[in-house]
Image (cartoon, rainbow, N blue to C red; front, side):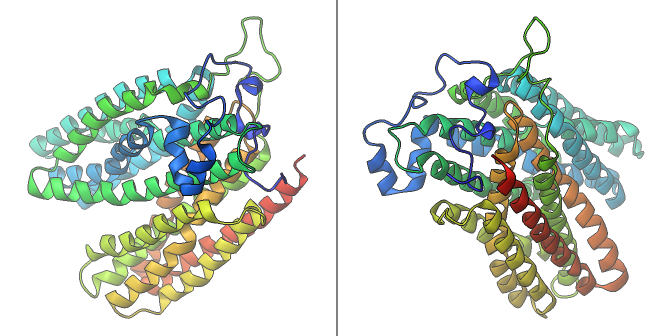
Length: 456
């Protein structure tokens, strides 16, 4: 297997128990290799192997347990705006959620690496539920007093910082599960191919939840009450996240605690993140900038045609094609390697993003966005795979959550820059930001090619 491919069973990024310094008694029912019908399952479809690898319940739990995170920012914006009567107040509170998530996610990932996913997720579920309910109470207090107290910002920041990082930590589990399944009796290339399939599914799950979450917030807030989406998110967090935390797959990712005798080479505290991790993190920041600036530019574009609220529907079109394309990565040939896939898809993104300057009507823009989404999903799948490839043993949780934070931070940057350009120079100027972000993604992919080629 070449260095450019996804993590192999002996890759440091797979975070196998022996590399982490701990050997679990039994990870999952399939953790010791495929059963006799593995080849038959693989022949019927690559995605049919995922339930076999992870065991029953893991896929639906991982999907719905990440939905509260997708509801949090929009739910906060809707509630605080409704309670205070100020769009600025709602936007500030939603921004506090984003900042808290961007700062808190790597901390939660690092703690998950050191203490194990199960206790970390259980604690995060409780803390986040309390923080979200405190946000609801503080916002309702704002409506009663007519002020915008600092308690709202503090609760919003805490809600973002403590939000359980189900998506990134699910990717960590898949990386360990696919590495364990890649034994001598597995199909040729089975481990790497299974990892591609799992990461394709995870990117699709992210796309689906980040389309479904805001839509659910809008429906509940308009039909019932503005506070209901956040209360529902809290209820889902306190029920679904603990179920995800205790699922048997958590044993595939043992904690990497420092031994009682002091530091030892290979312990979690002794392992430092290599500089090469910065490349996929910066790439995710570019991806977030692409998303945020596209949203802001679409708001300005649609405001002059059918109303700014149409922007959400237009953006969802790109999300749907991106999700479908992410699923297709499981069937792509692997000979070219991760870096070439990254560069080619990013170049295609930049070229297609130029087409955003062409439409003069909503249907034309919908067609452009549908096509533009095709390279977006594969780029996300590839960057997450590269992140796992360059992550040191025992630090997968830290790297995966850092990648997620990059998206959040980049989205905030893209929304701000795109919004300013749209306000001053119109939608056309704002559409140049996603073009530049995609071009930067391609350059980072070229740098990643050099890094992966030099890896032993």
